[in-house]
Amino acid sequence: MPKTIHSMTVEAVVLRHSEWGEADRLLVLFTRETGKLRAVAKGVRKLLSRKAGHLQPFTRVKVQAAHGRDFWIITQAETVEAYLPLREDLLRVAYATYVIELIDRFTYDEGASPFLYQLLVDTLERVSSLPDPFIAVRYYEIHLLDLVGFRPELFRCVECGAAVQAEDQYFDALMGGIICPRCVDHFTAARPITVGALKFLRHLQRSTFKVAARANPSGTERAEMESLLNHFITYLLERRMNSPHFLHEVRHNQYKAGEKPAQS
Ligand SMILES: [Zn+2]
Picture 1 (tube, rainbow, N blue to C red):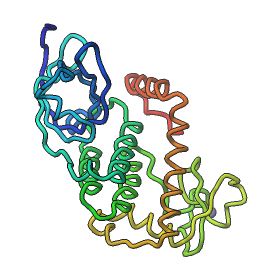
Picture 2 (cartoon, rainbow, N blue to C red; picture 1 turned 45 degrees about the vertical axis):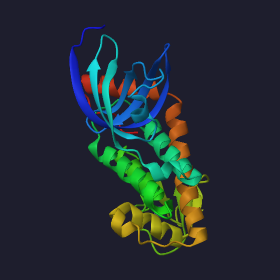
Picture 3 (cartoon, rainbow, N blue to C red; picture 1 turned 90 degrees about the horizontal axis):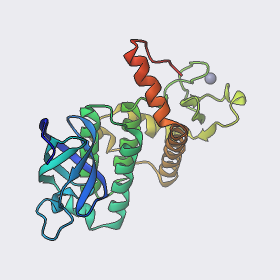
């Protein structure tokens, strides 16, 4: 047994797990207290393990973990919310898988993010219980982008700064926001967005979920909202995937050196 140097109790959502050695599992958790956390659950693959049932992906759990020599080791696990309705419906499973994947890919081991944790558990609850989770998932995307530092600018043209008028607009992923019709000639990669779909995206961005949930976009507006967010998110993830570790190291070292991280 490695000597315990520290232990803690955290609340978390299980993002994923992989097999680890003969009978153990390596879990990736998103915790309320410390953000993303990797921890080993010992013996969970043995028959009749009491811990195993609590540690399935999407489950909200309370875990006790002890720091071993190299890893956090889960010593106790208890389910807070299993989101059972979510597991009985393929569409809800697909939505929840997407919700989990998004937070997994946009976060590193960067410490506590209580607002992000709350957004995650609220969204899983909504995906599990609402008749139509569409607005809940779009709301999640927009607010997650905000919390990880990629809030899209939807109220002003990011080129000229003018307030967006009630007319069809463009969106440029590299610029991170709306390009107005007067500026769009300089942005060949910008894609059109109708004023109707944009109105709903803006509404989601500035509203509480309770207010946002009353929005009732048409089928084509829904398709536009989903497509624009998907385009922006894919762009951000592909750009970050080129060298996320490198970027992280650079930022980390700049912080250590007491410099302000460079704006890009
Ligand atoms: Zn403009």
